[in-house]
Length: 447
Image 1: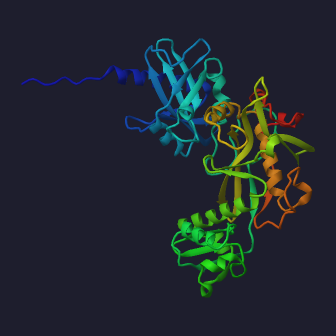
Image 2 (image 1 turned 180 degrees about the vertical axis):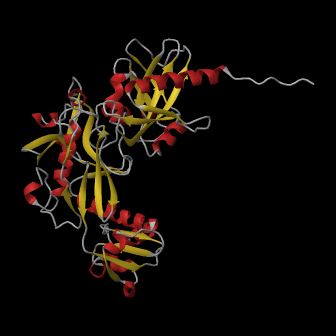
Image 3 (image 1 turned 30 degrees about the vertical axis):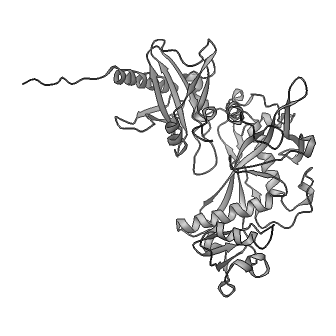
């Protein structure tokens, strides 16, 4: 009787060789490398961040997917760099991860290893989103990449960053503001089962329906007085109830929490509507263009003094025509910690062709900017958004925004006190230039 011999493919050996090479580089950084094992869907290993001086670890991880080849050239490869196009299914998987993910690109013939953070946002079928631009000088996976990889170890459930060690202490700003809720919330029954049906009914009544409400399964909640607002026309008048806001804000049921977060998001959009535009694609608030002038400057109180920022700026060609327009933006996320609610702010940008129409190269432009996100302009952007949110309802801090005198806001926001840490960042992580940042020395401070 003959038996078919067992085999191990060359691809398996190549893959294991690549894992071993990445493991060696990671250990040379002073971090810990733990492979997943034979079963994995899109992540090969975890890198645990470790202080190479003291040996301390803090439960901070970065996931890594390793792509190995023997000697083939990469797409569009030159002496300076190359492109790598991620698979849509990989990007979709990584975007769901609760820890940051990097891709390590290994070529065995020259023992080269390059790395890049994976695309975190955007449609996975867009090639511009999935394309990684590798710089052969800046993106080498070696000891010089240690601090940059450590910076990715962000706690996905709360704001704040792990900081590589240095000898100086410095203040750390959390990228969030505290939410001050109203004392009461109003609840009523409605014959409309879904929120979209409630909205349709409201549009049958008025062209400008109230937005500060959320509805699900025949129940509507709002911070507005139901009896005196247009919401009275879409609810059962005999079912109106007023409850302490804590009954929803501190509820442990996940469905109730999701409904409350929906109400917070709707209320925030309504409050910011006179000031900022909303991008459904990016799910971000952004400064709209200043009419036909397009460019826009906003003055605001920063950490130490009054400053200004170009929040809408057109990039012009040699013939003065507009190539694209960059809008300052932030992605909001409400989250709860114990008995308090916070709004996390992720600074980003929106790109348009002319101040209004979407720019078809927005994905590539965002990718380029993401490579600079380690610089100190992030701090300045956050300070700007913090100033705007904490200044809602105060005419003295509305900056140059040409909006009507504000009504008292339903949601109020307070800044969080910075904390003093015993570590600081290497200056060179923050020295990348941002042409749209304020031209003063404030943004040379670490985040």
